[in-house]
Figure 1 (cartoon, rainbow, N blue to C red):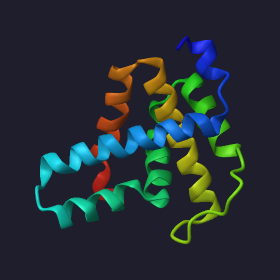
Figure 2 (cartoon, one colour):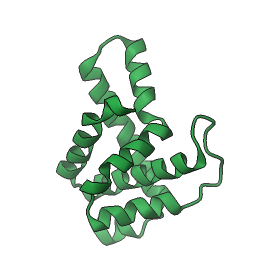
Figure 3 (tube, rainbow, N blue to C red):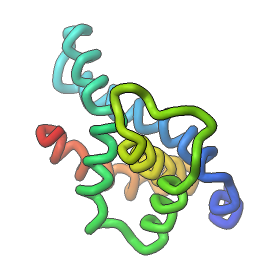
Length: 129
């Protein structure tokens, strides 16, 4: 896809893709550290929950380009047609949608080195969640 086509997507479409990519990166990362399935599941769940994603987007803010900040803002400000999960506040859920929109944008853009760099920052701070 061309960047103009990607930017024309609804932020929830970007977040939908970003959610899947985020989940895959986290699972791969966790599997490299631990092979016991129960521990893998617990670590993965900890990193993919909305409250953790909200913290990660705050950590990422200083590293984002203006375009990336705009993608996050668009994702954060969109209103899903359902409530936030019980484990997260509405604000956390909105921030996590912004992170997922960013990941979706980077993935669809084919910017894998930037996607890897974003996840390097996230994984460097995983102990903070």
